[in-house]
Length: 288
Image 1: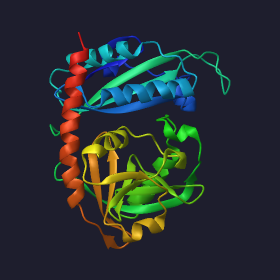
Image 2 (image 1 turned 90 degrees about the vertical axis):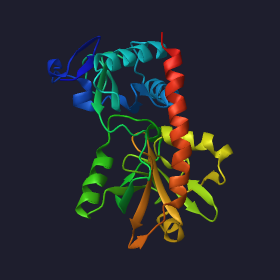
Image 3 (image 1 turned 90 degrees about the horizontal axis):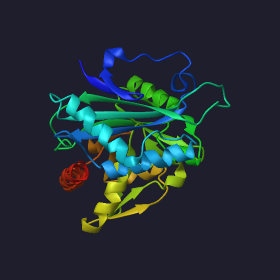
Image 4 (image 1 turned 180 degrees about the horizontal axis):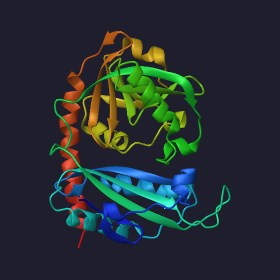
């Protein structure tokens, strides 16, 4: 039985009770982070905590802890689950209190759970995916799309659509017809000697591995540019990648009746793994 953090204490996960009035349950009124853990330390913690705090400010939700305090709680969750060294943390911060569309409070509650997984930092060779374009419900273009809010209804529909097409990934388009992101990932397209990724103004998530990729760019043999990616952009691409906190870089090896390469994705994944391990050490050094 795993130990989680709920509201203000550690407890067994079976003790968690969500009231029907919970605003996360009723209105998806909150934000979350999915954080990879390797050897009991979160990877790229600095990116995750900054994005979480920016999202809370945007949503006018008041955190109950400081950034440093949240790191201490994460350490407590890891120590309470000593048999689980590797996996994914899910951190949810949601608005507490009642009310309907006008909340009664901007205070918050916190929930953190840990799910174990393999002992890999990120897979190498990279995971390969079969992708499809999902344009039935376009993503709206606004700043909320850059934040990891609890409302992921369009992404769920894209996942259902991909499964029907015997695929495990989908590219989501925005209201202008440009690709904004994948189901749970940012997208990078290797084309004409450069990596293209949609700008945040396209409405996609400000991904943590997306940020790490830009920081890695100085040491890469290829430049990264923010540029609108349209479905036709993929037709003559050399490689297509998706990036997220769980798997680092994944390669789309099949899309629109065409196969794509993975060579560059595997090269860059090695550098990303090294950077991720370094970030875990950075977290350990901040803890008492």
